[in-house]
Length: 225
Image (cartoon, rainbow, N blue to C red; front, side):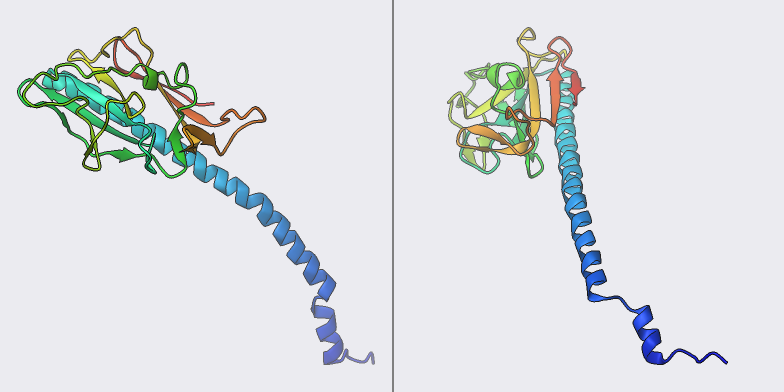
């Protein structure tokens, strides 16, 4: 009769050697190294979509408010103010013939890691360069220009303090012939410029969310790469 294997021999056959365990650990490290960047990239892309959708919603709010109340409204972007929310905070103002301009929406902050691209204000972010200065109809009472406050402080009239585009009662933009596009990118504002966290070899943003406001209608057109 064939002798049975001893318990010691059965344990050795069923276990893993130290080399095998090290190989498994190395494989797991390699797999995690591939998965984590992909997951982070998905998270940033999701945040970019959320930020872009927020801007679209604010444009629609400003336009609809102007048409519903037969007045002027303004979509405002916070500019270079030395805060963590520079080029990340937006709000909506409304004009009243008696009270003047007032803020009707809390400041909306784009998700962490998402910022409005201030590097190209001519094309990609023409909204920033075609801002009205000064605001119209500020001769009422004690109104000051601009009628924009952030964290309780009146913004200066400096061209970099804020940017705004005004919606007219018919839903169109004031000065509709002037382009009004906002580009959201993955990055942050530092040293008077936007620093991209996702860029190509020429330091151009590879992932972005463009919101163009059509001047004659005030409606939006979205572009994603």
